[in-house]
Image (tube, rainbow, N blue to C red):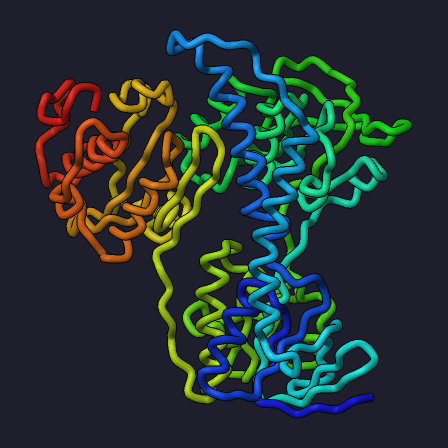
Length: 482
């Protein structure tokens, strides 16, 4: 057994791990990075990038389908599934290749291949070949898809989102379980590419939304396009030949038994911390075996162990993983001089159509923090009659924005609508800069743009906060249809 000593060990070479490695190097050259799987981040290989490639193909097909509404006519689009998946995989490999190139630039003596397990708080064993003694550690082992055990009844017809991006061709039918970010994006994209899709969920949840008004709107608008039941009743799940078969009761109470080429389990992810031997470190773990850490320092208790990225079970998004990796790496590098790092305003987006976005505190978080007291107010707007949205025939959406009574401090927003990803950035900047609603309304708004809908919601909020006049219907200052 080979034995090594170093200052910092980073376990995992994904987005968080690479960031932690580079930042720890600012304080010490003695940093080792351990990786058991393929190089290339979750985002590049099986997450945000390949899914957006699939969505881009779906949007191209959908734009042709929608053209007659503008008086533009052409033949019905023909979907070449093999060509679609060839581009998805080719570009996916290109994006992953950039990450691999970055890893290749790391000195070979700093990289160790294998699976790490803690022997105690200062030692990890890598497979059966190396034991490393280190002064500090960063856990950046990512996460993996998770689904109920009953789904195994589907046998080899059961897939996870990772598998989708290795298809050589599009199937004829897919049942998607889990209308969260992954299920909603992939489900709608496959539907628009001609695949028969049925999307099932439980409890009415859709995307990351917590605001009941926006959630209800989203459920309605997606169900108008394809089969979506976010509070479904599914039974008799099994594999029959080369098909997955299930029985479900539709919203009208009618039972159906159908077969699908595949069942996509998009029911969540769990941190990869359960096989690290963390019980040998003495750090405090939650009920799922995930280390409890400070969100501002990424330190596990008062220990010399830090955690970052999906493994932290905080916010599983690439930009958050990168920020957490930066904080964890810097603090591991300079330990015991631990410092709070920059935590940016929360921002999340679902690249469905219409898009979903959340910024700052969610409706649920605000309600829990402020309780039943009337300490915050809600402004809202529908995009169905918003001028620019109607021009583009993208006039589906509803926005709710939240602010604190008395101060007018903008707290956050949940919304569904056109170009939500871009509006979300404006609002995230407002949250991070601790702007009030009146200050936000002082900012420029061009005409005609979709952002005028945001201004209407802010004006509604401003009026309810008693900082401005009530909204005037068809206000000409706002521009037609704003």
